[in-house]
Image (tube, rainbow, N blue to C red; front, side, top):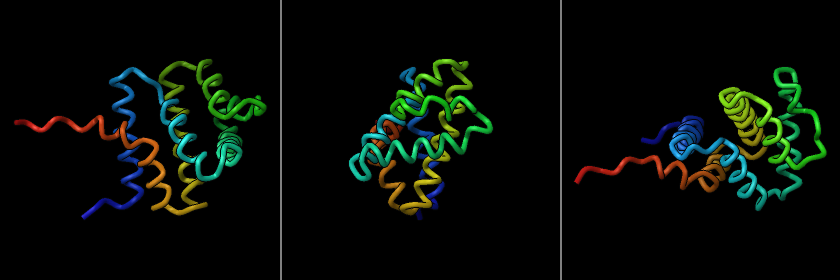
Length: 134
């Protein structure tokens, strides 16, 4: 029996983050992969619109997310995160990512969203699987 889709999404994200942490990479890699995968479906402007909608919704907690919306979404996020403590930056990035994927689920459904995330992050999540003993 498989886990409910929402658990699959969180499990996939968590596994990808463990891989990134092991490689000493930031969560921006998740955003870049998601932008590429989702951009093929809804276009770059669709991704940008969805991203900035989520950034706007987060402005109460993180006002800097809703400023300088003239930049590209990933560049905007990277510039904002660079001004923060690394631990805080990762937390904000992941909170925004959760809001983004929750919004995407409302728009296209959970199963399709999970498939897009698997396409975007699949290799990161698979890299975390330990080798089986011989």
